[in-house]
Length: 213
Image (cartoon, rainbow, N blue to C red; front, side, top):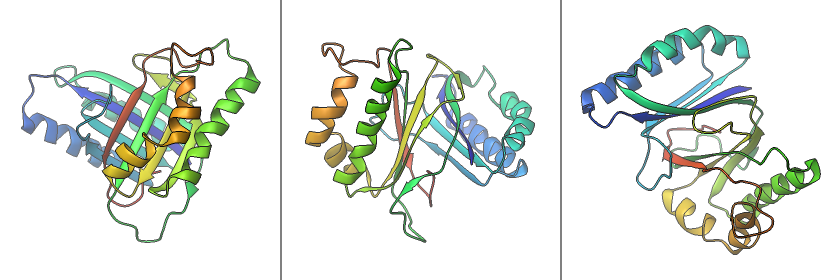
């Protein structure tokens, strides 16, 4: 599966009508391009560098997305959009996703690992991120991917995404879990010798309709 996630930062002076037209235009374009899945939703309060609108698209093949890029770029008018952070990547989700599961929260984290980091250290970092779903039942599905193409504030190297049963599952049991602050946080903490994520991250999430990961 070929996937795209864009975090769109609106210009602060645009009105609700312009926001709605952008979202609807992106939904129409994704449908015409044959997207297997299109989640296009406003972000929820509490995101960090997460933008105002999440655009998460899934295609069977990359060529479908390439054909849609000019139409998507045309919609991202600088009069409406101030900034975009985005990633392209491949992969399939892991998880306990139940057929017909409704509602919940989609969360994505864009990050950049220091390019001088040894491969063995990167692999250990990835393994520790993937340990989290074992300890947090609120995570229904997840995917950790290496980025093939990035745009925005940083040359992102990874995207770490999950589906949660609800917002409390993300903000409480996940972020506050002892495994998170004992193992995961050290990779991001500039005061810790193990730090490998030095740039800012994009932590974004939105309401979920169906499955997104």
